[in-house]
Length: 201
Image 1 (cartoon, rainbow, N blue to C red):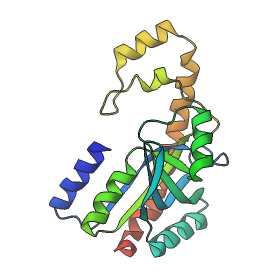
Image 2 (image 1 turned 90 degrees about the horizontal axis):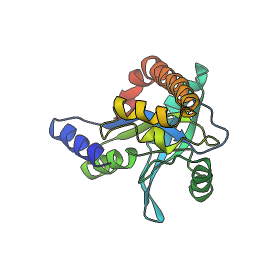
Image 3 (image 1 turned 30 degrees about the vertical axis):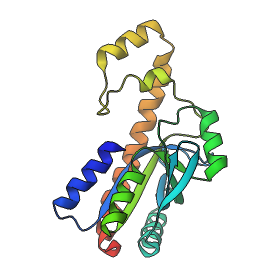
């Protein structure tokens, strides 16, 4: 969240007229599959044991983009995205967060970008694609193989696999789902989203 907040402030200083965030997320709604898109109509932020709405969407932009995705048969949902304080890795925690908030997906950046946009009076949008579904737990060891910039710590990864070979199947499944999520996100962006950004303004 800190990096997203600072990057958003830098972009505003550079003169941008709108802010947006896109990327992969964890699914919270059990009906979502890997590669399903979530177009936010609201953003809530988790803080300690409370959740607070920090942004409500531009209904015209959301409606136009959602209709365009449906017309191209790109699997998409519109609803709430929650920004969590830490990764939501277990199926149990995903279920608890979904029950508490009814959010479709969880990420760790959207609320920061939305807050900066709100403070600057700029339009904002959030588009996420599901990587790990609600019913799937991601082993903490896999997450620990990433550094603070999201890059793989290869030496740590190799050591982890040597100590726990069973993680290989989890890694392969994560790689497959991540590829599906990125492919759908790229297709949606290039065929539908980028051409409709002017309606956000």
